[in-house]
Image (cartoon, rainbow, N blue to C red; front, side, top):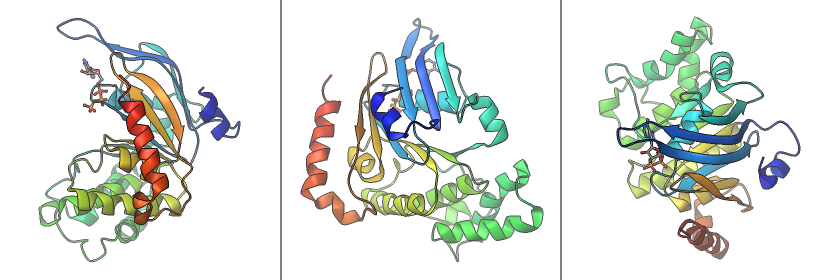
Length: 266
Ligand SMILES: Nc1ncnc2c1ncn2[C@@H]1O[C@H](COP(=O)(O)OP(=O)(O)OP(=O)(O)O)[C@@H](O)[C@H]1O
């Protein structure tokens, strides 16, 4: 466990513990070491971003956390259990870069669907809950719209509402705003900060955008490539609640410059 993060978790069981993890993939040109010697403890209810150059293993780390792949060496535990068990018992919420909505279902139906498939909410409550969630992401009035009738930002809001539908304690987000224009991206950042502040959840958020990582996070994990490893774990002690204007402040700009320096240290 990283000392900084262990301290951050106040000595309690972290939400996610990654201990001595290495991940080697077979490829036609030989083995690829995607991750090497990763030790990381992600505390409960914190917003943690993972940043780093392309190919440094950010997505692989997320896939290990949710049990989509198993480490070659080392151990991943989520709330004290294996990722598989956690996924079966409690479930992660996922949001990916592309809003993977079903085009033939309305926004309301897309949000309600996981509750139906996973039978986690009483049938009579599903529609009501889907409506509440769409309201939470400020999409009231768009319940009957199909994905093709929504903007990219709106589709990502539907994805977030859908990920929250079965009330996951841990939300895994892989470049969720990467395909959005800068203005919509900042708007979505503010929405996510608001949502996170209203609800207690652990969020692990992968991004290439350092300003986004700083603005959103309590902790930024900086990774380095070849092989993928943790270069630094940075605590972001900017006050909360955070408003968009904080990005123009000297404190924020100085932190951003330091973060850029750490990343470009290859
Ligand atoms: N299934 C796989 N088979 C072989 N190699 C893989 C596989 N998945 C990932 N890799 C390799 O592992 C390394 C890390 O990939 P990963 O996608 O985790 O990086 P990333 O930091 O998320 O990259 P990006 O920022 O470009 O999305 C890369 O060299 C990639 O080619």
